[in-house]
Length: 530
Image (cartoon, rainbow, N blue to C red; front, side):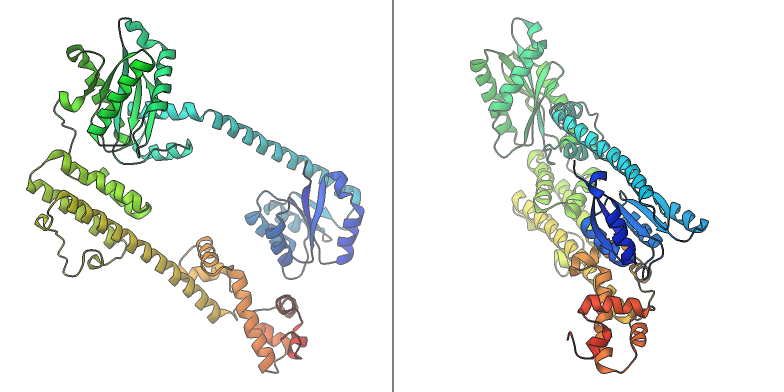
């Protein structure tokens, strides 16, 4: 079993050496992975080695042990911390507890006592590791059950039992493909002299396996599921003729390969997976017509009943889909949503007035998106845009579709550019404030964020992503540049240079300066390290 990593922090080298020498780390299940002489150095090392246990003194220069524990609780919440101090005061113990410290030891440090502390910590870490492995075992069992969960999701979609806003989350959780856009449902019914055979689960499973192997709708997502006493085939398409042709091919092939008489009911296209219930209801109704039409054939509900499900106007759900695709999706998702909506024009054959209303509603959605994202509408639609687009400028539905796709993608690109520009301006403003206020010893990401009216976590992430360095490193770099200039060009005392560059403690300034340039301030002034 891997040993746990320990980091030892104390400003006295003799104490660190004594602890290191007196403890048989390996026999206790630990490795002494790092040592530090103050809290600042320890914090940097912790980011690199990610220790499991931190042993730290309380009284240290630059950053004391309590502050170190507080910072570690944020960056390494799972790490165990042990503090030791020569000050037998209740206040230190109380503060240590508030910092989530695991143990508190009084100096001088007793090796047997420290060994007992380490043994207790090892028990806690072992238990934590065991719980983590149990979680991994649960995940493996979950992955083994994924096929069942996926089929259950499709069954519930066909019954309309999955909330619309949970569909994509569940699909992602089950690691399955469930793209947006139009879908169609087909139900395969086993017919024949022995009507009881349709309820034979093994027979239904063989039909399902056959469909999985032989269904071929190129470029379309195809899924199967057992549904009541039938096998459902779900396809991401609105091409009715193509769907019916494939269902007929599968029906004939099943008769040849399996010796089964199948009747197939096909529902009308629906807007997306969230409406598969409507297509399934149509497929079920189509199967009911086999009493009049006969068994062993493909029955499409659109040929049997008037299709009243088609609609042209953009309802709230359509508008949300367009908005989500433009703001959160990629170009492919935008095209997919827009082409499905415009596809209604081809299927319905509505008059010009209704088509004009559709175009007006679609344009309004794009105008709202642009304005909400501080994008000029003329940048999207061109100069002189009045808010309406005449239908007469298009010569075909294909031209209208291309116009809708093109302008949706234009809004998407402009919104992305606006977000990127805003991010760059935020980082530039932060850097400007650092260059202006570097001499302020209270300068920190928290104080700067108060001026930017943003959260520290957000600014830290943006700063690192845009500049390639952390905010703290940038502040140090700016201060060191000014300190070097003062040492080269003036006769100011070192403590004055420290104050002028934001360091109240001259010793800590010298410590940071040497770490940055490799020499002390006095040697740098003398010409070394330049």
